[in-house]
Length: 181
Image (cartoon, rainbow, N blue to C red):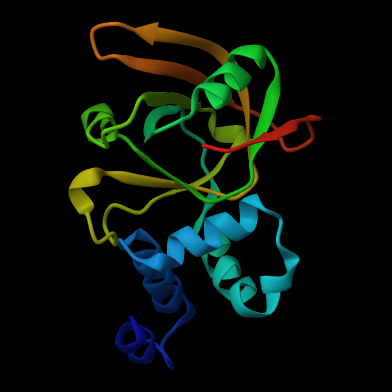
């Protein structure tokens, strides 16, 4: 990890940002620490993680096309119940969120829940990072920290033995609750 950072030390900003995103996509402590810090709204780590989060945020941008992405997650029943109770309500995910354009990839994470997320371009900061990811076959799309969603429905699929949580992105001006995925 240190060598990758040293290699882009005096490079153009785009190369530095691409390196930061590539490191985020790796199976390391880094993405876990960043997201745990954001979810907890832990401001004590601003000095150490703030610049890195800024680089990630610079990579994502408004997207003007509609698409559907997927995210597998292992949720406790209480969290699933929270989503059920939030149908037609707006929620915010505080952390950066990795999703996939490939439903099969998201379902392969051994999870009990599949988020089916409609990205409405005018409301979403996102970036397709598959070309710079450590795992390009996952067709990863990175959603910005603080993304807002409307919970459309929650259903249980007995064939896949998963809860399907249908979300749709919304505007940052909507009054919302926070949730974890």
